[in-house]
Length: 170
Image 1 (cartoon, one colour):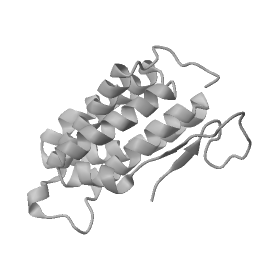
Image 2: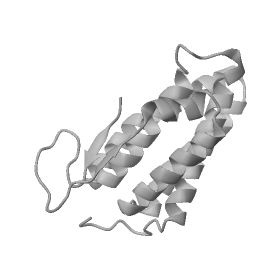
Image 3: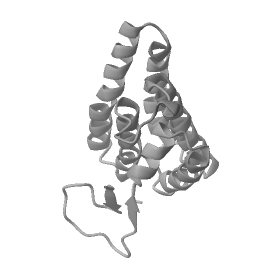
């Protein structure tokens, strides 16, 4: 399953845009493979493609960094005791409604794209799926790969000229 975005249209809204309507779809299975199956080549390939798309959609560096900062704060919980890991799991799940809020607050297709890229990664950390094996690691390993995925998105976004400020009209 993938999320599809057409420039100028947010999920659940109609309307048309001028000119061609490029589409964006997240490869949910590919993201799950990166997180649950530890596929570094897929990580680089996906994040390169997605980082460019985020930059092209004019996602502001401040928008992606604020979300990344929240995730970085929860990172230490994943490597403490079991009680802290449970808290880290809860915090990671709560990132989903925070992303939805940010998308609605900014009325931004670009934030919606970031949300679409992160939600399947969050799901893969919490529930690696039915084809999960012991070699794929535990939730700490998957969270570490989630951090790599998010950091690579941020890096490629900046490398492709990610905007320093949100820019309307794109």
